[in-house]
Image 1: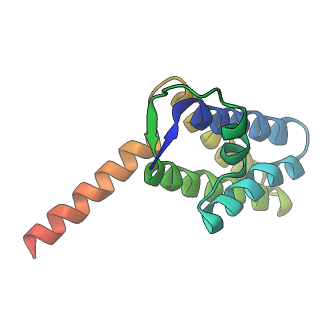
Image 2: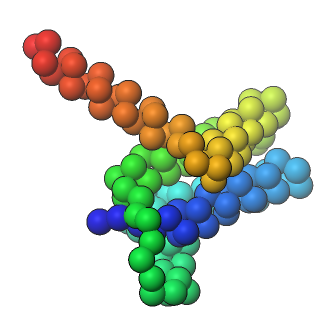
Length: 134
């Protein structure tokens, strides 16, 4: 089942804004996208997307692959956790690095290029080739 693109973009914008706020104001703000991310990974349902479905007008939208979005959520959540923990252990450079990586990836995705999609595609091709060689 797919996810309407406007809802995916809403999630991406949420990640960009909360991560930026976390880097600029307080690393504790990073807990917002982390909690949403962990909830999504455990339940396979993103609370922002669930809430957004209720507000989205009933129209035909371009759909995004749910499995791909879950993969992307894994990457973002892991990077955000590393960023948050880095700040807690006074490793600010590492915290900013991982936070900026999340902002760039989600920001570029909003512009139309999905870095997570490229990573997943290459991983799936590697698995396929490895299986064929065996």
